[in-house]
Length: 203
Image (cartoon, rainbow, N blue to C red):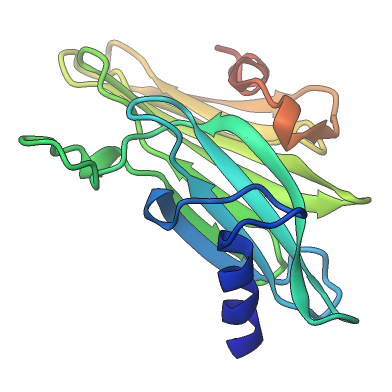
């Protein structure tokens, strides 16, 4: 861990290998072994501007030289609000994105719904390292409308296999469940379009 912290300190300084990152703009960060090579890696969600989509910075541990090597930046793929802005009355911590690293090295990005009328759609993206790139392995959403009864819907879709399950409440309160079955795809995280997930789920 000491070497990882040292590598992070170097990273945050000006470097020819990675763009400078202002530490106060790091919303959340997590470590894990993303490429399963036995070395600790790092991922960070970095704020850009208030209310704008956030960037994701990836770093892979270099076993030979014992430092964190920049492995790409995915621009504006994470939506959410940060509760750390120095603005009076700013209270949006319930829309701050969350990041979790799974035991298998994959990452889950939980993207809570942004305020938009009475509807809320929370999303979760599962990101994995495959053949030298970070790709979208899974897409999940949960939808509800606070002003409507029986308006809940959800879907859990494996992007790689094209398989999954969806559910949607009917006006009478019953829930209709369907099987998601589309062509599997390998989609780089940087090229992900949320519409792809909703379309596969039948929305």
